[in-house]
Image (cartoon, rainbow, N blue to C red):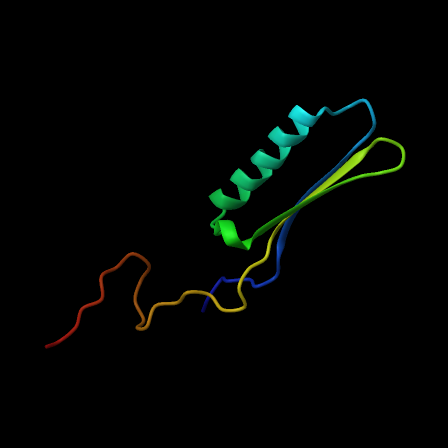
Length: 87
């Protein structure tokens, strides 16, 4: 049985006008990217979108778009256990 969940993982926030700067926005985006990488995302699976609204606020959505198939071992075994082959 696998614990793999193919649904995307999303981290998001909305920040009001006056509560962010370009520097703090860059730091937030970098932090979200780092969190998703720590969770196991490949850099190519991460999409980050930031949008500024008409009132000066900004929303940031970082998404880990997982592949539909998990990398599973070819043979059964406990995770981290070397596969024994009879030759």
